[in-house]
Length: 60
Image (cartoon, rainbow, N blue to C red; front, side, top):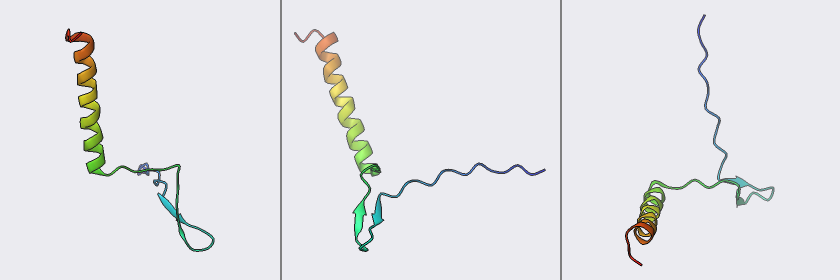
């Protein structure tokens, strides 16, 4: 017996074609680019470092 591979669910499209054949955005879905992921990771890391320094570093 051969096992069936589990298929990944198809990602929801970020935009659709409307009835009038115009591209419309799907506001329930947003896929971040690699550049955005890196930028927001670094920003969150910086904010976390500042908060940690304020509360645990003796700044005040």
